[in-house]
Length: 226
Image 1 (tube, rainbow, N blue to C red):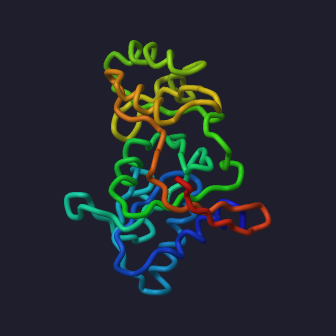
Image 2 (spheres, rainbow, N blue to C red):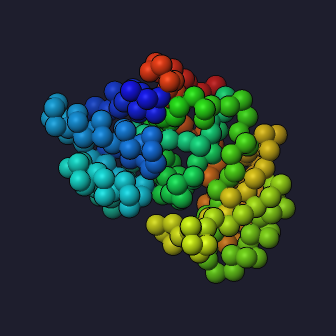
Image 3 (cartoon, rainbow, N blue to C red):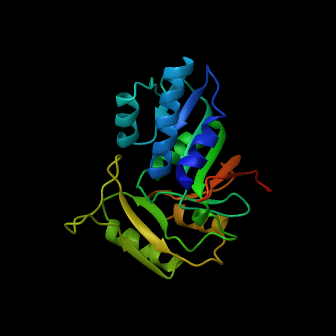
């Protein structure tokens, strides 16, 4: 079992029958979704879930995980999702897969958010990984130039053919490279004031527990120290 799988499967132990879950997006969340499906089959676990991307929704449907919407439920009991970075204060950088808008909506509507990651994602201060920022396509060049003032460099995320990456919600993604000395609260506040910005991939005060996996298969459970 690899580090990501170990972390994901440890987090799924938090899932109880009757829960409403948020299902994350990405390679680590993939293992959690598979484990949830296994528990549904073997334990007759009864849950409802909201997916954070088309990719996750498709996988959940294939694995026969019942899906719901925020039109049918107002609050989730638990979200399980990965992170690109997590620091000692449980501030996260998320959005490497481009699903940051839905991921933040789902996390903010959850009583608990369990972060799952391998040990390479753990750091003292976030900032080594670029901060994804979702923006409206209209006028995105101007938005990108304005955002560039808040970091060392910025780049429009593109596909292999050079065309802009487009999220499930029709947004473009700019990746802002800062440094490990950034003030995440101030960066989130300032960039969200830029016209055209829809969401920024800094998650403050949302994660309530983290499961960090290691190559030898063991998992460390961490709690925040806000």
